[in-house]
Image 1: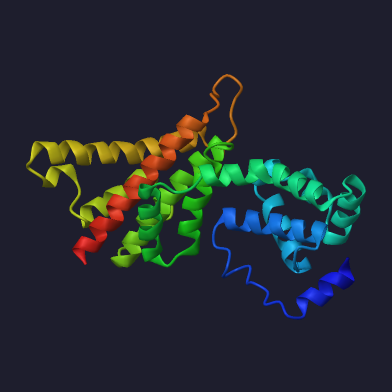
Image 2: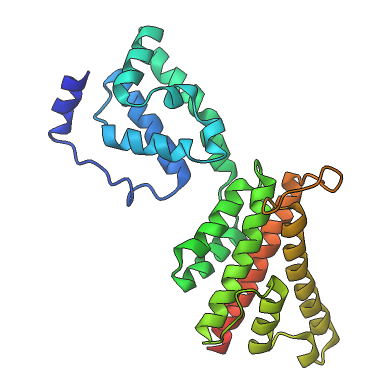
Length: 265
């Protein structure tokens, strides 16, 4: 098997794992293709890429549970080859088996494709050129279905990070011990978003609602997120719909604040 792959690699331009596979579904499909090539000699494959992709998906809280068991159990392509060649004798059987086993993982990523509002939030968060701000958002989206508590905590962290970045963009200091709502009040004062500064009733109501959303995110994270221990009589386990609400509220508020910041520049 290795000798055949070495021959095919001679005239093969290997893709870049970092540049050519930007989305999770592209990475999952590439991992699937590597294993099909190992099983059927359909084409060359990268041992290094298999190892990296296997580690990438095993480290994911959600994706590890969706990953085919043979990926988890086989650390390299040689181990996988010994597994697959003894299980199926024909290429067609091996191909179909791998496709079937990857269905859950690929279906999950297809269901997680960003909606237009998600794409807009993703684009506007990049204004800060901060990897960890964008990471909060992407991990919150990834976890909202299977890790609601983690998604709620990440939503609050995203909100706090964006607020602090806005203050830093405006060269305004803030206390590291300030709670979320205190930081939000600083930002709204600077961006002219406090309800008291507006005479039109509907705008006062909307901005008052925004303030309530931020307070709610802070309180929800404290009571239902995974940041604190819970007493047995004081704990209500959040569901995916609660996480969906928290993620969407945080994302929409961040989008609104960033767009307002741009208008004031």
